[in-house]
Every structure is written in C-alpha cells, then in structure tokens.
Image (cartoon, rainbow, N blue to C red; front, side, top):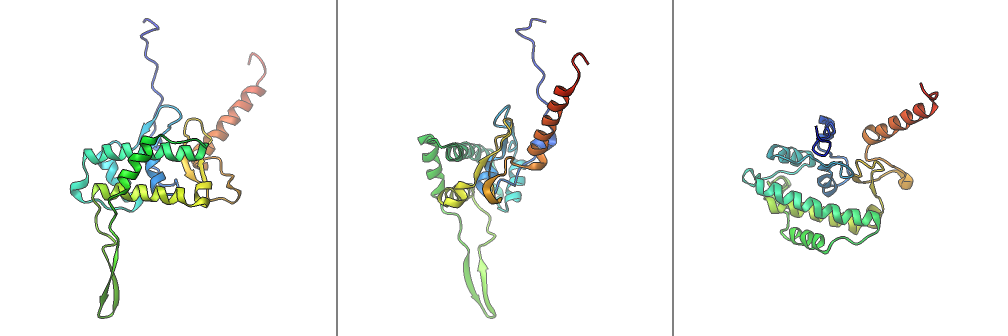
Length: 209
C-alpha cells in the first residue's frame, strides 16, 4: 500500500473517555468539558439528544420536552466553544475573540425563570423552582454561571487547565494553595503517574534487553 494513502489506526476511545464530566466545578465549565481531549483528537460527549438529556440531568436542569432538538444541540456546541475561548483566555492570560464575547452576551439576555414565594395557609411555598426551561433559558443559565465565575476574583483565580497535554480540561481548583494539577486524579493523574513509571522502567532497563 502506498504510504501516502495508508490510514493510521484511530486512537482507541473508551467508554470512560466518552462519559460526560460533571466535576469541573460549575455549570458552564461542565458544558465546556462536554468536549474531551481538546489537546489531541477531540472527543464529542454531547453528540446526541439522549446525551443532551443526560447532561441536563447531571447538572440538575430540566428542559421542556419540545426544547430538546438538534437545533438546541448545535447552539449549545457553539456556546460551548465561545465559553471555552473565554475561560481559556482567563487561564492563559490572553484576550478572547471578540466574537466569543459577543455570542455569550447575546445568549445571556433571555433571563432564566426566577422562583417566587407564595403565601399559604400554613406559611410560604416556593413557586417555579422546578419549571422546565426553554432552550434559550438553558443557555442563559449557562452563560450567567460563566459570568459569575469570571466576576468572582477568588473563583477566577481558581481556574486551572489540566496538566495532561491530551486533556487540557478547564476546572475550578478548590484545594488550599491551588496546587491541583489534574482535572481528576483518578483519570489524568493516574494516567500521568503510570506513564512516568513506564518511562522510569524503560530508562532503567539494560541496553539491548
């Protein structure tokens, strides 16, 4: 076979790598994390309507049934990339694209529903806390969460990118001293330790063995 047309084997993508992440530290960052392995070959974790429903369940939001559409899925991916551009800019000390900022500001405008108090014969109840969201309300909730993270100096300072060159997931580091290097010790941390161990074994092996 001509080497110029030979196809290289695709990297193996396990179910673990395709799993949605809900450990980034905020609603908006969990959406950003729905595209995995940005540092290598990206893995789409929000590829179907079922995955959209699963993501909403994971972050504790409910959508109107009619809002679960391919159009919303496309809009969320566009929002996700704008959000990534902005938070990555904050982490790496650069300016985000003006188009990313404009898109996020546009999506923030439709206010999500606000729960209200209602007096009853025995006290008060909360109305509207569990009302399903429209697609635009969902996006507004995500962007407003992102704005809250970036607008809080302490949380903004806690933004980190995973040290794994394959992963680069952005998360909030809640640890004292902000010394956490990996998005997850169980995932990227253990993988990095295993790779370091293999390198040590290889360097210690006798020549020609």
